[in-house]
Image: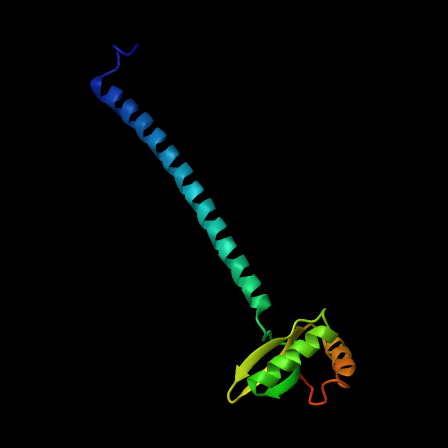
Length: 132
């Protein structure tokens, strides 16, 4: 049967098969590259989300400030707070010209008010505010 086909027909069939195989592999490679690209993008977004959730200033959440003043006193207040309230994480932040001891990221006003009321006897200069 191949002997009966003309030279042009043989060339046309060969070219069609060659390009068909070539382009089918090219599509598989592109799809794999897209999957890898999507996986990398998803990992990047997840890491950014985690770092955002760890930040101290999430809008709409509450922060309780225990102290504002010099570094030595701020460290003492931080130690005193962590001894009395080990379940709450406090941090020291510098805002010119003072060091501040904060309990950031309280999810709602009720949590902030509970912490405020329980810490008020030990920390008379305590403040509560909502993050902007």
